Length: 158
Image (tube, rainbow, N blue to C red; front, side, top):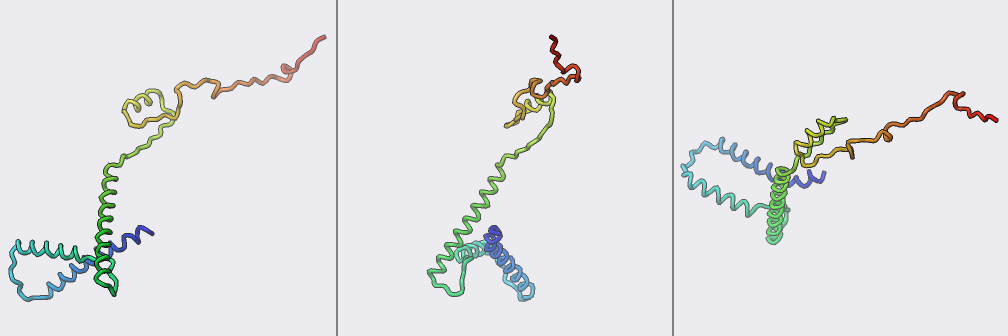
């Protein structure tokens, strides 16, 4: 829930820009007056100026009644927010790029040749749940004889 609330201003900004472009495109389609030819250099220069001006005037925290000082602080806050957002995205991207992939394969009852083969593949962290390969018989085998009733009676001969 917190993540969706924190992304809300960004989504609002992006959707606002997209809608603005769509509306301008529709208005240009309806306007049939011939436009003067502008060179690509002039268009590029004008585009750079527009981007710079919009970057300076960008205010995501605008309220209805503001003083010049409040508008200035809101613009600073917008720039700080966008900086933190960009830094977070870059940080998460770098983290995901360099994150080691951990692969766990559990092999039950491997024979010695499988164990040696897996260990020779030089995994960084290869572990075996067995502390030793040899297990004494007394740990998994117990012998308790049960005698017949006659054999278990002790006879005291006088």
